Amino acid sequence: MKKGFLVCITIMLMLSSACENVQTASTTKTSNTSNNSVENTTVPKGADTSQTNSTSEHESETDESIIPKSTAEYCDGVWTNLDDETEKSFYGTWKVEKLLGFANSYNDASEYPTGQKIIGDEFIIKKDFFSSKGLKNYHDYQHELKNPLYRLDFICDNSDSFYRLFQTDPDPLNINNNDTVKYIVINDSSTQLGIPLSFFIVNNDRLILLLEATSFELKKVTD
Image 1: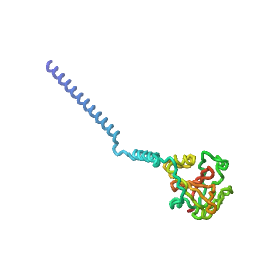
Image 2 (image 1 turned 180 degrees about the horizontal axis):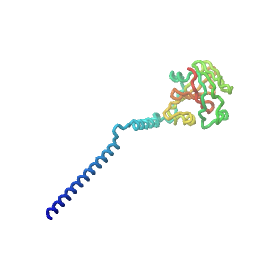
Image 3 (image 1 turned 45 degrees about the horizontal axis):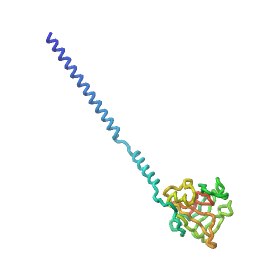
Image 4 (image 1 turned 60 degrees about the vertical axis):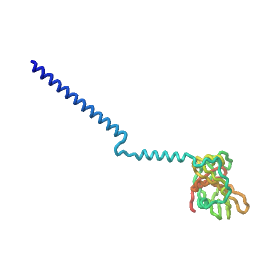
């Protein structure tokens, strides 16, 4: 009887020990799986981080474009002849491509809200010759000058100073915060009188025609 009882006790102890081993192994496996999951989630092996880096770089570029390079409140009045770089950007045959917008204050001649009917018209700007005869629908805008006087009047180094001087919203003109805008007028060398057309050069890259209080985007046809 005692011998049978001891056998039962021995079997129960063996079963208990086996259960503990199984539970320990299961817990260890679960713990390892959890740790691996955390590691894989935190630093995925072979993960592509280019998108994250690209996003960070884009945010950095955006921040740089927002931060003004110049905080000047006013445009610089220069009243001088065109420099070589401006001449290179300015001279050529130009076509009126599209209406951009209006100044805050405009007159009847601006033909708000469509602007003057000059889309597709062309004019010529050369060092020794200027012709706006191509603005065929408006006799008052048609001028032909030999040895015209081109004068750079103002340089604006940010959109705020541009708006302050010209009272024109820079956004419709696609003028950004850090753009440099040069304002050019034209005079007849024989009379010293100005003509009713003037221009904005943006970053020596774009040319905008200012007609009355109306702005038009221009596209260079030939140099």
